Image 1 (spheres, rainbow, N blue to C red):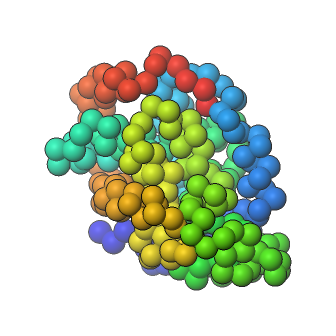
Image 2 (tube, rainbow, N blue to C red):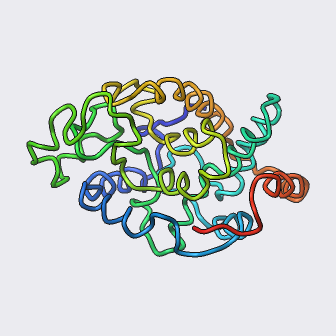
Length: 254
C-alpha cells in the first residue's frame, strides 16, 4: 500500500480539506486559537472518556484509511508494543491523535487535523498542497514571507507558531505526564515538512535536533501501522486502560 498518496488514491474530501486548511490557518487565527484553548481549560475528563468521543470521528485529511480514531490509535500502539518499546512509547502511540477532541468543541476539521506547518514565515513548497497557500491572506504579507519571517534563525520550534490543530493542543494537555521524547512525538508528528522533507531546519535549535530522531522513529509507526482491518478492541482495551492509568490521573483538563 502506498501511504500519503494525495493524488491518485486520496478521497475527494482530502483536497477540499487542505484548501480550507491552507487558506484559513493565518497568524491571526493561530494566535486566537491559542488564546482560546491554552492553557487547557475547556473540559475536565479522563483519557478514556475522550477516546470514546473520538470513536465517531473519521479524519477528512487522511488519504489512507477511513477507520474511526480509536482503531488507528490501537493499531499504532500494538505495532510499537510488538517491537519491544517502553511503556511511554506505547502510550504515545495510543494517545497521539487525541487532540482531535477539539472537534467535540465544535471546531471544524481544518482547524484540528492535517499536516502542520509554521505560520508567520515563508511556506515550504514541500508542504502538501502548497498551491493553496496562495489563497491565504498571509501570502501577501512581506513580513511573513521571508525565510525566517517573524522568527530568528535557530530560535527553536518552541518559539514558532505552528498551524493550529490536534498536535499542538494535545501537547499542552499531556506534557506534564510524559517524557520529553513523547512530547516531541505528539507535538510534531504531523510536521511532515520538517521530519520527512527536512525543511525549516533554520528554525531548529539544539534540543530540536536531538529530539527529532524520536519524531521520525514514531512516524514510521504512525504511518505504516495503518490498515483497513480493525483491531480486536474487546480483547486489547483492558490492557490499554491499565497502561493509561499508569501515567494519567482519572481526569485531566482539556
